[in-house]
Length: 131
Ligand SMILES: [Zn+2]
Image 1 (cartoon, rainbow, N blue to C red):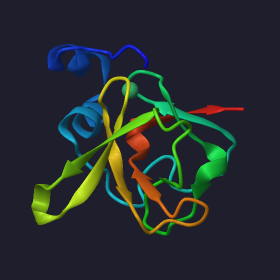
Image 2: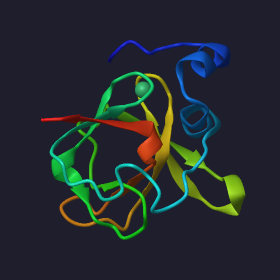
Image 3: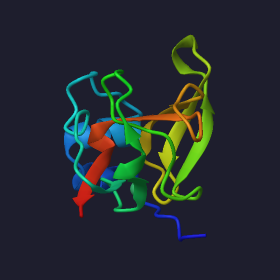
Image 4: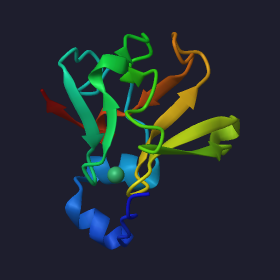
């Protein structure tokens, strides 16, 4: 297991932009079809914007039509952590960066093969490291 990054909310507030802080630390959601990576087809590795942890490979990105970048699997099963989220009266599964705990988005069991999973991720949480 990688070392976990522990920072106070105050430290995160200084390091992240207000938008990044809102999504990553306050579990916000960017408006659909507005994110930087919604339509991106560039090859590379999507990393956590807060800590640089490698999260998703561009080869697993697919066009879900939802307005958010969507992936059918993480780079590595340990790249992300999941947690049950019952906010807003919905039963969803939250996806977080396993290294720093940043909120990334949610995962739904309606994705394409081979996994059948759809990781619905905020562009704001991601930084594409192009190949
Ligand atoms: Zn992170």
